[in-house]
Amino acid sequence: MTAPVRVRVPATSANLGPAFDCAGLALALHDVLEFSVEPSGLAVEVGGIGAGELPLDESHLVVRAFRAACDELGWSPSGLRVVADNGIPQGRGMGSSAAAVVAGVLGAWALRPDVEAIDGNAVLRLTTAMEGHPDNVAACLLGGLTLSWTGETGVGADSLPVHGDVMPVVLVPDATLSTEVARGLLPDVVPHADAAFNAGRSALLVHALTSGSLLMEATEDRLHQRQRATAMPASLAVIERLRAAGHAAVVSGAGPSVLVLARRTVRSADQPPGAEELRDVTASVPEGWTVLPLDVDPTGARVSRGTAQVSSR
Image 1 (cartoon, rainbow, N blue to C red):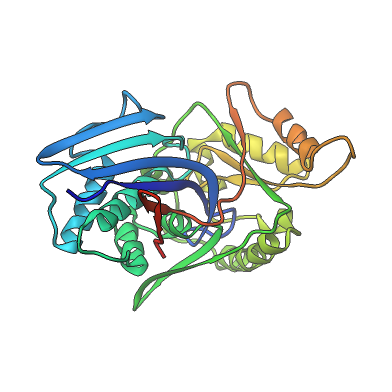
Image 2: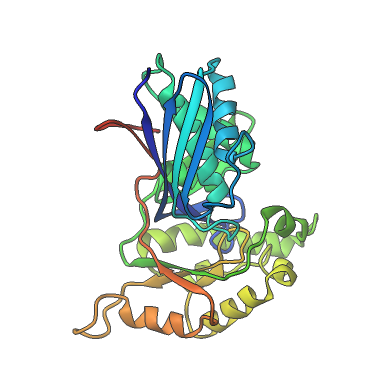
């Protein structure tokens, strides 16, 4: 039997304000999954978030992604066991489905006995096809700030390091929102002026996240956030309060979570960097929401066999 493989995949936040469907940020909050070949059948175990709620059969998204990768590789294991320890909130705009798809595809690639290296380009292509757009899967795979695109030659992505002063804070409500519902609220046509505005802000966003400056200006959006306000009015109200107070707040992915790009500034010698800004942000959060101060995950998905690390790039 092939030795089991372990896959760790990060949460992600996409769009980041203006960069709809093309920018993503990997966050240091993870799902960890172990894949092993069994003599027969399918066994799925889920711990952490989603335990007792997610399916334990072929309909599980990780398993579906694993099977899709097996078709790509021309391989079918005799049996499969998947053990998941989930830390990423689901249905809240933090890339849980992208993480599941990436984990399943990487698990199949790493588990097949005669594959020595993971083809990162093929993994990106397959996971994008399953998700429908590359922003979350690219960030999950590569880590850091990722920019992704599609063209005649397929899908591409690249990763940039985020400035150390940037402190992502995710505000997670109790409510969930499906990506399909959120996308269904978007208009088919947008004004040219709004498209030009977002193109400029998207370029500025790259500078802001890599330099740690101009975060407020760089996170302005006209294309998708207000258009989806009816599906998440509480989230938009939180964003308005935070931005009025000078915090760079945006919808995280399709929502309803809110991402704040705070700064690790030092305002007081007896407080850790960013502590006062985090306190200000928390004061604007409604009761029942969870505040998650997170680091940027600079490396993205990681695969290991025993003690050996296998790159997914």
